[in-house]
Length: 352
Image 1 (spheres, rainbow, N blue to C red):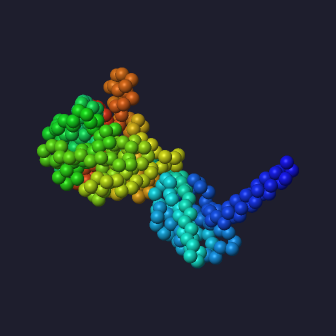
Image 2: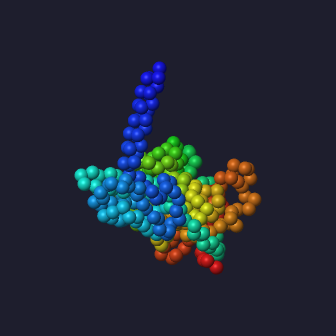
Image 3: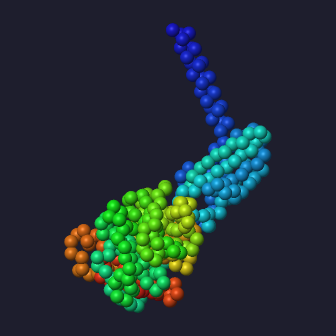
């Protein structure tokens, strides 16, 4: 019995020694910690924990697959986060030592401590709006509004006269689809569906459906706009997806944050002078986002535009919210409305 115990003790000791020796040969991140958060614009110290006998040839440092530094030793490097997108960023270190190459990865989370500028609005004009329109997408095209509406069996795509609120031309979206955001690109109109995992392509002149395309990694279809190069799409989270305007393939995303954290439920979108304007579903406000980083730079509260004592039941009160942003680039006019609202408003924004 004593001999068996001795053998077991020696075996356990050798096993522990072997494991500790193996662990000691691992290269890991010393700084930052896995999943550590940093505010955008603040430098991040990056340092590896490397066994003493390791002879370093080079260490390449990458963020999201792009190299930003290289060292011939294990001295720390600094990551400039000023222009990086917010959210999860992948850090990679590639260590070359003789014939050996080690690749180590880590994640950090970039957030922001910048408070959005509180903008004020001035009401310029009030126009009628079709109260049967559960507005999901709104944009300004060739002197008229392009509007897409929701609800299965009731969804429409239509051109609308700004002054009368009446449809100039309209088309029913197939009843199996819940229509969402829309945008005109060339001779096509792209329309999202909510949970059907498919986008629709229409002829911009006839409003006839031409084709469909599938979603990829994104969750749902909410808002849609165009920056002149790519489609930008919201999915109800804090993500804005970038899509190829010709193939409709997703080519990446940004995550949207303000000083309080992730800004969820981003809805209808409009791209205006290099910035992304977004409705926040249920909040009756518009946030203005830097599309390169995801930082909310400004916001405007439009609660006072919500129709007073207009919606009667609890369902309507909770769902017929501010949603719809359209911009007339030629005459610098900004329009906003809401789901089944009786009015479309022209407003101007300012810091004072």
